[in-house]
Image 1 (cartoon, rainbow, N blue to C red):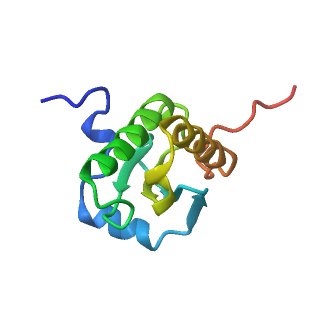
Image 2: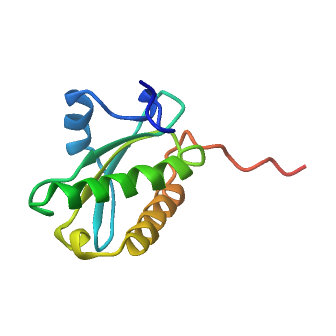
Length: 127
């Protein structure tokens, strides 16, 4: 069954991929989210989620946060550099509105674009 707009190749699924990100050097964060990222050789961004019970005991709340992260990533993924990223929620995310969470995620993607790994497209040469 096809995921709604987020294909399998755009998701991190292997434990080894998550483990590699735990020790990676690229980091970005805000009030509600923390992200680890590292370059990949696939030519596109991949997303992994780690939303623990510490964020909220209620599965409904954790699923809402995951849905918002996936939706935000889905909209931005073609603009992002070729990186594997793991997005983790902080406890503050549970009591925050969806609009505020999406705004913070947009800021995270902008940080990722600003700290673009070397494989990014370079500026056109001046003639």
